[in-house]
Length: 142
Image (cartoon, rainbow, N blue to C red; front, side):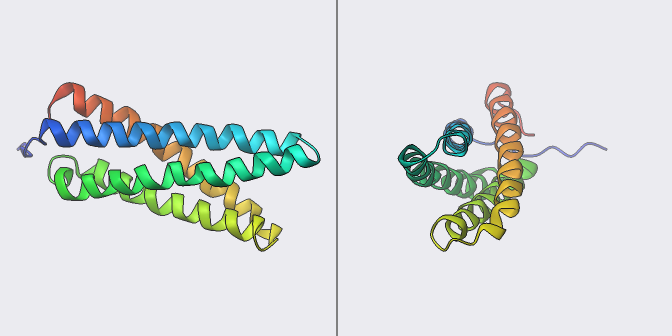
């Protein structure tokens, strides 16, 4: 027996897809900036570290808004996307927090956790972006 889920509104699907896409873009910007400060020495590394830190907010804000849209408007139509959106935001906060422990407090022991969170965030962001695009194109619930 098949269970029919209510369809999400086009506006909710579009908002979720856009916000997830922006979050995913910032995940890749974070990846790029981290590789730059790892391979750069001296003052250049400090500049890339600053850019990396500031662009984290470009990930956190759309991830939070995507989670809100998912919980409010998509939870019945796309429960898996809703869970992924919330987990993406929580993992992004973990990544941001561990990054601050490393950069602000000098707690380099948190580096493996930061790398772990970045891997989780990357995987979730890419998956959510692909699935949200498919949801938006199909107009059906997933």
